[in-house]
Image (tube, rainbow, N blue to C red; front, top):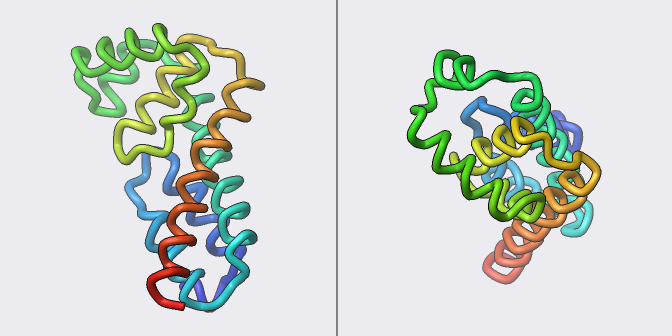
Length: 145
């Protein structure tokens, strides 16, 4: 897939992987690295795409009600309350952790639900996601190049 779509495919895949759709952006980033795309370009495109996906989750949280989160996203209320309390405690800084598998989507949704500042959230979300992709391409470059 990535060979045919190139960096645009990487961008789209990273958007999808940051939403509630289970998808691995790490595999796409690894593939792009092995295809010899520029490492900085990969990290930036993946970071921007994944941030857009994260902000989609944030927006879903902004529009949601507790009942919808439980019913449609199949997230248990106890887990929602636990994440809600932690996100509330750390505020917008929690956006730095939205890159985490599984829990990252829940953090983004919780931040939207709590109506965190979207401008600060998007910047911190990008910083966290970009740092992760930069680490991945760095490791791939070191290991295979």
